[in-house]
Image 1: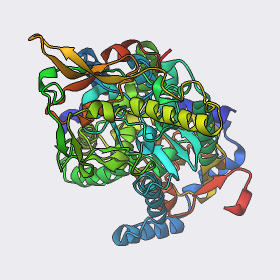
Image 2: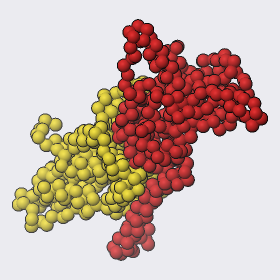
Image 3: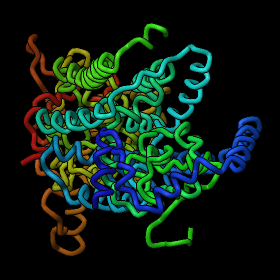
Image 4: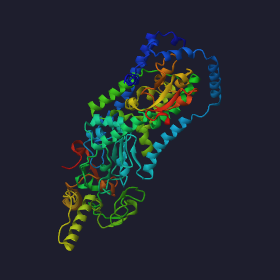
Length: 325
Length: 284
């Protein structure tokens, strides 16, 4: 339970807690102590990383993820275009083969604003809640949200520009997202309007794909420009209440990225690619408080870290399935 | 850069706090701009799909998914853009371009709505309360001028569709492919879905009376209880009696009369203001 509480605290914007060396199990302390020594292994890893940097092998899991993301969004589009009624609606609410699905954040906004829940919405919300709990919560972000994909492309550009000194990376307080979440919940409750939906890039993009583009895309473009020039992945990192909602759902999910201390040589490759690097604080030398650590709720299960890790210290874990994965 | 390096941790924390405050204010501020179109009264003029709750409830309950858009056989429903503010992604109907003609019979949009923004208790077109038609410019009316109509109602390029049940009950036909030849224009009455339904019910009653000697079994509301529109001789200011469309209390505001009117701009338009403000989503 304390793992979940700590994971939620970090999700809401807290700084990951550092465990004192004294409080770590003896075997963990031993691993931390030994890590410094293996000069040969570290040299080999350095060479491997240099080779990797030169050849840039494809990020296979990222390709798979983009394929899934595009496929899901395309399914909405094609279902309407060919009128096959397989996946009707948009990401905010839909029907899969007639069965109701409702985005948790949109449903929450509607419930708070309307103050009345019809049974279909309840069915859709419950289904989606269970679905994303099983699939890891914020995995919605990296595997389904269309804004996430655009933001990833914008991030590539941002990193290139920053290498040339043409862009900045303003770091905001991560608690901003929690404040915005509370603010939008309060606004929906107080005004009776689903205020957040007005600017939700997820909803705007999903509808634009399915029903055709509109002026609303200008807002999405502004967000992307801000991320490219001023702050890396700002919307997903510091602002989006949808991400926080799904983060809470996934806090106790059986699906996590799993960290194995003995395999880790602390190159920090994972933290370089991570959207939410604070969840990987545990991989910093001397930080891990256990031999095996499940990565926290803010993790979007994008699996870029798994691809990036040269020593196989990060892996996919599904509790209860053991080694089947 | 060198200036930055000299910042103390306290200064850096202060900067981050201020930047985060600005981000919060910026995002919240941008979203609250969505209130402006509402405040301007622009949304009150919107014609909403059948069953829509009164405007403030409707905006609250709608989850902006467009499932109503997808099921409409005449594609009458469109989602509003960001210039509608809080109404972005909320469905509306531009009746002059494509009215709701109840081609689906069973109010498919209402059945599709996952949140009850379109009231689920509604079952038949005659219970709908979208607004009411209004004759705004009788002098432009062909009937008032004593004129008929020969050819298509809205020209060859008009893309709107209607159910012409005598041609195909299940597939709405383009209005542009359906020319008329009438001594006196009565398209607003002739194409009114409520009037068509009343006539159909009467025909069925007649048929049943002949064959079985009893009236057809129906659910309440299946046959519209009141007429919606008729052509009536109205005395003008010059004392001359002319035929003119008169809106009756059975009108549900579907907008077919506004769409089919051959005059440009339309003689009849739907006034949805009253019903948007106070309707519970359907007639009592």
